[in-house]
Length: 351
Image (cartoon, rainbow, N blue to C red; front, side):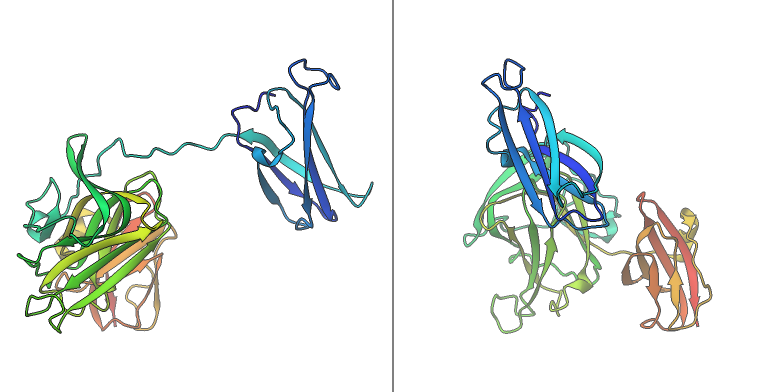
């Protein structure tokens, strides 16, 4: 086997009694013959493998340090303890190459679909944007590039530690908004943070009535567009939302992150009873439901929003169960999204 371009060896093992498991690779060299003078080999030892369960081993070929050549691998040798008494089941023995993730998006972020009448947009080709003083304040620690991807305007931040975006001159009144939306694409960030800062009624930084809150998103998916729809209610310390003047992005690795951003806006999520007939029906049980009971949705539901009779979003759910302890008696609308990104809607009576 020519493993020159491979990076790892994989195998699954299951043993009822082995206390040591070894894997040796032997390369016969260019002459293709055993003991031809150019053979190389290396053995790895795995001590105390978990017993009576399947274990997946993904072994970097670089760990076989004495296996200088990998172009003519002719032997794989398994051994272990107890001597002549070990039992092992082995499956899925193969070598593979780590996928190389792209470092920049080749496709633009998806176009948002929220109604413009319900949106306050900071940056998007789809909506009319408010005036932003700067997308990189003087106190930021990041590099900003304005680029286009497939003709779509995009913000690229690199060497990112933190970056401030300010609307001090035209502060945003988000009182009637329910969510913040942004599309992000990163090749390397392991943590992404979003902070909102409201300057208060005096409209001045550190004027005594400022409020702020930062949310942390751990391990965002890399090398793909991720759409964040963040309930403003999650910014719990952002007591006021009438004079939002700063949006601050930060994350990890410190001063090493790269992120592409598009479609940064705030929106009001509303659903009317008439909208129920525009979607497939969501199956829920029980209905009606008593306060304190749990509403069950299908297992393939990944999230849902609850709207009151006035169309106001009052609760966001992750998963397929809804607790009713914090809801009052009355009619509600549940709008759910399944694992195929399909929306389903139904009305529920809580009594």
